[in-house]
Image (cartoon, rainbow, N blue to C red; front, side, top):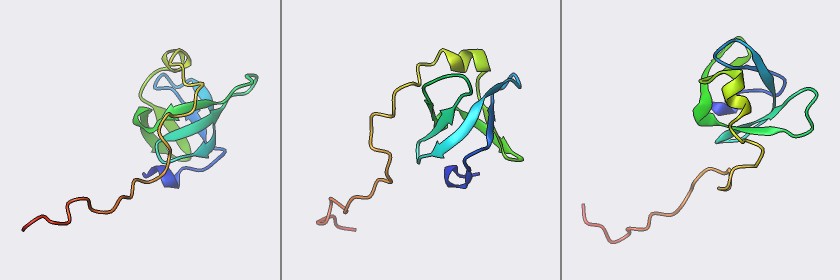
Length: 93
């Protein structure tokens, strides 16, 4: 499943089956996760998504491991598709 197919409201679970949060927003390289009872959202990198099944996102680490990852800050790089013109226009084929 591609990141673009994930939807807000889907549950996010650690690989231990414990609930980590809910999908709030999906970017190209991350999922913005809301967690009940906590004030700040978390930015889970797409590389930590192990599987998606029946509207549930499974992480590749446990809930307690994910809790300590420091995902409070948004990604550093702009979360937009990389599109750049070909830089090697004089290349011979």
